[in-house]
Length: 217
Figure 1 (cartoon, one colour):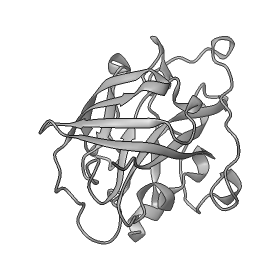
Figure 2 (tube, one colour):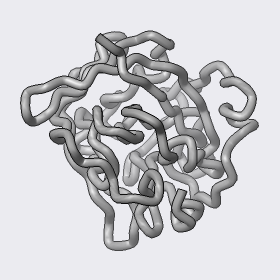
Figure 3 (tube, one colour):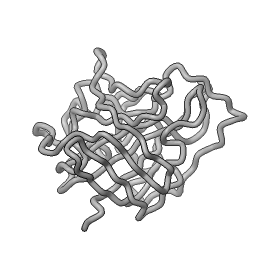
């Protein structure tokens, strides 16, 4: 990982949203294997937030991002009730990752400076868990289980198919930079949303991260 990625800063997907504790159930998932769950979070300085963003632009590996395949335009996850458009996101002037606005809570954001789904490396997609408008595109993401199918349709008409390998949950103060952005031997997918409990500031305390690998033929 580049040194700059170690200083990962998180930006809330729900910026400007109002959370109501009575309406928001706690989201919990089973702890992952040692070294991959909350207790094994990779060292990372982070502010409270929800989606990955980078000071110095987080990028997998030391080389340029793999961009040999077409950009994603739609995400389908039947087991989570997701069939949503995908919007390319870059970085804000302060170096944090752009996120879908609360008014576009039915959209998924793709980090366009990283790999596209199906290219070698970890493709990163982010989405709201909820907003002031109610449940959002990734509301049912924590219900996914290993083996569930994910399809990413691309602008050239092709589809990259993945299967969930595992889910992990990390405090936003210990975002797993290396796990999300680190080098992989082949195409992989990362889906990120909110989780945990509501903090004093009205924001979710954790990130739910779905890791997926190619589904194969």
